[in-house]
Amino acid sequence: MTDDTFLLQRFRIGVTVRPSESIGGYLQGQDTRQIWATRPGVPYTFGSEGDDPFDLRQAYIDLGNLAACPFTMRLGRQELSYGDERLVGSAGWNNFSRTFDALKLRYSDPNRLLTLDAFGAHVVNIAGFGPDANDGMIFNTADWDDTLVGLYLSTKALEFQTTDLYVLFRDKGDSDPVYTAMSGTLTNRATPYDIAQRIWTLGFRIQSTPGKTGNWDYDAEVAYQTGRSAGQQGAAVPGPEMIDHEAFAIHAGAGYSWAKIAWSPRLGVEYNVASGDKNPDDNNDQSFLNLFPSNHKPYGRMDLFSWKNIHDLACGLRLTPYQDAQQPSHKLVLDVDGHAFWLYSNQDAWCRANGVARVRPLNAAALSANRFVGSELDVTISYNTPWKWLRVDTGYSHFFAGGYVSDTANAVTGAGGDDADFGYVQTTMTF
Image 1: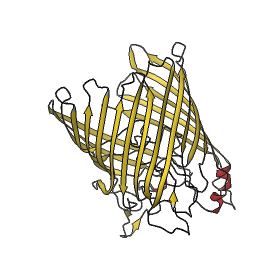
Image 2: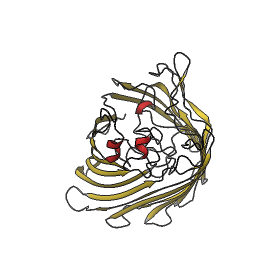
Image 3: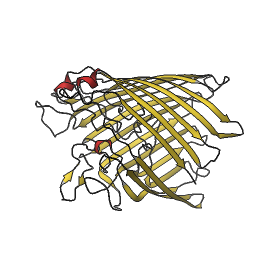
């Protein structure tokens, strides 16, 4: 946790083309900058957003017409988003977010009660030179040594809920991306995008249908992983060869809404757990791999945690102080959320929202530290203004340091053992 104040800028421009009912396409460019920050300008480094001067973000074609045939296809650079994006999502809070070079085939039954996606994808990495910044317009390319394939079925056959079943396979042979310094040397080995892995992820998810379960709502997701990965390895099992991998993750949540009283309050509770490695000196890795998630919302707005080596007990209150009945999009929403975090295992690392970067090194102090990391309070306000083109979001978060933080602080100076604060104001203009 380091102090910093910065401005993030993101500009996107896109065009949609549809020459016929069976053929369409979309092209989108994006320019993102990190301004006034003391962190490096290279993405992923020390939690940095980094710079990505104007680049191609999406470019795909759509083939198919559901009115005539239940099969459609999307080919090209695109977002992939499934369920709550706990495993595969666009990571929209990140300034440059995430896309894939992918082929996606979809079957939709005539009654629109079932969809089945089959896809093969390669994640697009942000290209750059420098250890400080991406200074040029360097075309982002997909990592062809990092392959994600999957089947994702979603059905509303039970009218009171959506039910999803999925199987995902990720085959990644290295720990790219690695950035090249001006001197020609490689950098960023210490914070790779992810470890080498050949991992199967099997899971299911359920979510209640609004209005079908009275004032109650619920959702849950369970995922199991098996395969091999270059997980953490101690002296007894030196790397970097892959070792056996078996891990799990669970989410469960429920809420109750009072729609007929002022401000329409909703009170919710949830629990998230993901396994962590119990012994770095054996030849088994139990640390759940978070794949390609959008982790900003579910595990605290400060982005200090991911669905990896975690217990997270959370509760939240949502209020709608203002909503225009004549213009439903014009409303203000207030969220107050609280989280309590423990590590699943203190023999594994505490990882940030990207599921890779470690908040603290896994040293002797960490291996014997208290597993209670701390608690977080998040207050966010979203306001859709009367002008449909303008949305304003603001938030404040405070992290209350727990035993793990104090136990792993600098033994001499005590640095790194304090609470932390985070605040932001964001405006979105859409034309």
